[in-house]
Amino acid sequence: MTGGAVEVVLYHLSDDPDRVLPAYHEASRRMAGTAGLLGNKLLHALGDPRSYVVVSRWADWEAFTAWESGAGHKDQTAPLRPLRDTGRDRPFEIYRELAAYAGDRATTLVADAGKTADAGKTADARKAADAGKAAEAGKTADAGKAADAGKAADVTSGAGAKQKEGV
Image (cartoon, rainbow, N blue to C red; front, side):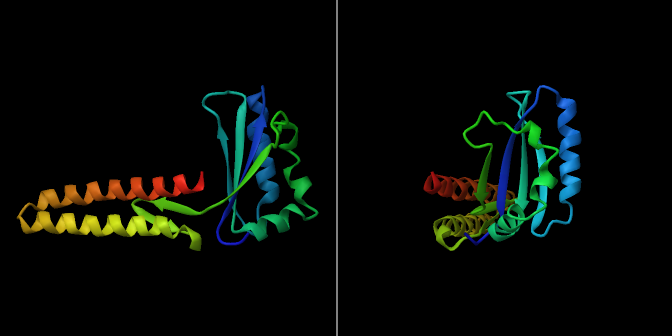
């Protein structure tokens, strides 16, 4: 399972919010410098004040599995283990990144996601054509509006297309 970053989502529950942040910081401190770990973050559910998730980002599947099977794994994550949401079938999920958007630019990360890249190219061509038509008509302000409309279509069509394929 190569080909892109991996994100691991760990589910936690706590009735005592004062326990969560120190445990998260201690586990993160212990994991600092771990090969392949790009970072992590703690999220708090808006709909359930007891629910927290830790999302860690790994360079790839191999880096994550090397760490997970290593001797330090359990010690590094020990501060958060008592808070693990054991009421779930699995207290974690692992996701491989397929595509991402940064601003108005799409990045397709796996070869089989070509349809998303094609949708982005089509929308980019449409943006350029719309901006060119507006500029030819002497409406430079409208050119910017057309480009902005194209960007919105680019984000909607590209992301939506990939989500539908993956579900």
